[in-house]
Image 1 (cartoon, rainbow, N blue to C red):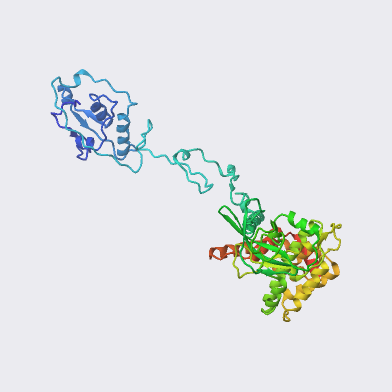
Image 2: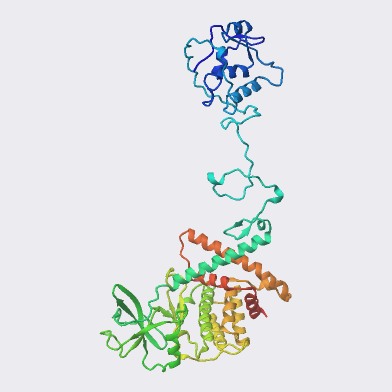
Length: 527
């Protein structure tokens, strides 16, 4: 790169401040690659405010005199550097070098410029072009619409919408609400109630699969059987139950052989056919098949016997003898849970157009439910299908076929407990009287038992209160009760506690209950 002759030193002009030419050059970036190397000094010095010395110009030595800008003028030092930078950009046309401006003698190369990077906190004013490394664009802020990560492709600068044009159509996926609806307490409460109900249905389905899982299914050719015990595991009023193992390949199940007692009443064939055709129900004894005679060597019975899926432990009559010694509050609560399961079984029969002719506690079986602690409440099984007969359902509101028997059984069971004045005891006594007087269906009886166990109580309805206000209060009560149940189940699950049969029955009640059904239950109990 060629420079003009420098035999004459660069002299500071008026008010030059002693700043040398090389000092100014040292602080400037190197010339742009697109500028001709033999013309940039003239451009540089001309833009810097230097003028040629007349005495040197006449001799053709190319010396220049530096005349700085007036510091008091608007175009101060910053403006000077901005113009210098503008001349160094490729958009400025390069001036042709005049032949007489430099000596024809070969000139030595100047020393290399120091590699120094000019750092600035603000870009210099420039009316011509902009430099990418010195100008920082202030990006307009976008409105915050969510906590989503943004990559480089999504971070492009775009025009910001004015506040009046902002849209709030984005939805919150877990709640299904738009951002606009988040400001509405009614919409938020409705969304939370819907999510609670949906979660309650999911919990109920999982608990049902847990308690009813592992059903052995029907017997098929190729299954092998082996008798486990020579003595019965349970004895009901008309049958003995023996444990049997069914084996097929690597799978095995424990079943029970239901052996009729000698001298028992001849079962009704229609009821047995109904039992064999029913789908699995939590409170009905299900049959898996028949063991032919001679299949089990050493069996203490003769002939073919039916195989049941659930292994009973005792009967309700045997349980009452032991349970009546418990504290009155615990005994009454257990009685209500047993009657609740019995009413569920009878409701299923009534829906099929069948009725149990005689309800006997010695023919009601109790078994340990699957998937929960053995120390909890037992699972009731209605097994006396030999006394089930055809009973076509009547019109809505007709007397229930099982109401008088349920009322008698309830009074008998409450008579075994010590006298108590708990609200549940008073409610069960009231229900026993209503079963005899009104004869409700098994479905309404089940709803009344659910209300006595888990609410709402008579205080929600009030004595002599108008029907409208207390019916409207049942909706908020139901939503609150559902939320509390979900929290309680979550707390127990976090502590590693397995759900109980009572948890599942309560979950079933709150998942199916409506304001209308709870109103009917309260009317049956307290009208």
